[in-house]
Length: 355
Image (cartoon, rainbow, N blue to C red):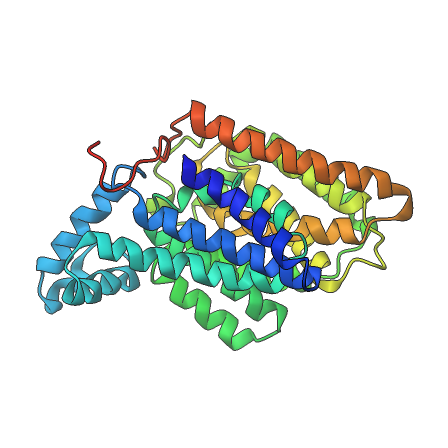
């Protein structure tokens, strides 16, 4: 677990050192860089037992490596992922090297987008490591790549580069078909949502939650069978709903609408959409998988909300910073020490350990 402690202590020390000689903006970027580099190290040093799906991915890597080029698209996997396996096996016919390549493709685009959008590295990091997406990165190689490309899609949406936005999502879908969910980013991010709309949105959310099973049954008729066969979601589905409700309430109550910038408002829209997706998670694990793409945006929102707070919420905002840092840090390590979770990421093992 020492690397996970270092994953939090390293950015803290980096921020403290850099902030002495430069602006806070650069200190935040340095801390974010430190965090993702340590995360990359954690991912590449993990055992193949750290992540329930890795053994299966190793099996397919070896199978694809042994297959001729004329057979590489005959596998029941997305073509981009199969091609990445094949190209890697030609250069390094070792699953360990493949894990390193996937970790790089996953982590460094994320790092780039977070560096660009960071406002408070400490808040962003502790929330990020408590999102389900963080744990999934250790096991779901295909979707981890797609999620990372989803953050790139967010950047293109922010810059209104529609063609690049569409192309990067189509590329992400060659690694995990569920990446089609990323197409919703552009219209949702740019929608001008007024607070008055909450009088309609809040009752709608309540109704969706009450009738989530019936609604999801209808929606799954539009999905491939691979996304509608299973029936049960993760045990923390309700906990995540509660957390997202708190975040939504916080992001609408605390800020002065005139001070919250366009990025903050766009990310808040995506948070609302994430909550709607999460309402279906108690019914089906597909909803949770779809929401992975949006959970990674949430850490970037809250610091912007805090920066834009109304004067009367100044004390509450400062208190919330302390509470978030303390609670999410303690909760992460409590979870790490007391639960293996459904993806078997904890206890963490290095690749040289015999487990």
